[in-house]
Length: 136
Image 1 (tube, helix red, strand yellow):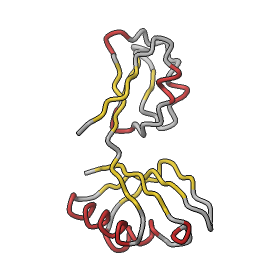
Image 2 (cartoon, rainbow, N blue to C red):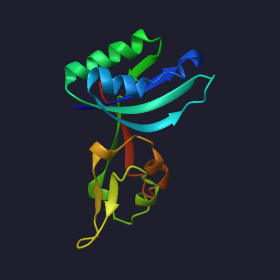
Image 3 (cartoon, one colour):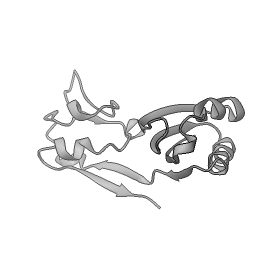
Image 4 (cartoon, rainbow, N blue to C red):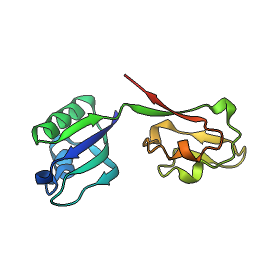
């Protein structure tokens, strides 16, 4: 199972080895999607955790116990594919590779599991076919 989280660090936690501890203690594969962390200052981390649900929950509990705020990412990007003209404008803005166009059909392909919800496609699409969808 793969889940995305936003972790907010207080200044005193920026020097700790969070990713190392998550890998060693919980056997979790980690993908850092976006980070804004400076030593000695608070920071924010968008992280993807891949493991069994029990291990992810144990890691979330651990992160909270270390004085960090952790919130699941509850948004997804939705594409109105039936209206898409496959112009490709969105593909150049997609840093995660969730959007692509290739031979032989040259139609836009959207792989939501790769999406990091950076929202750059919302601005790039001339037809405004990308929407943010909030899940419960």
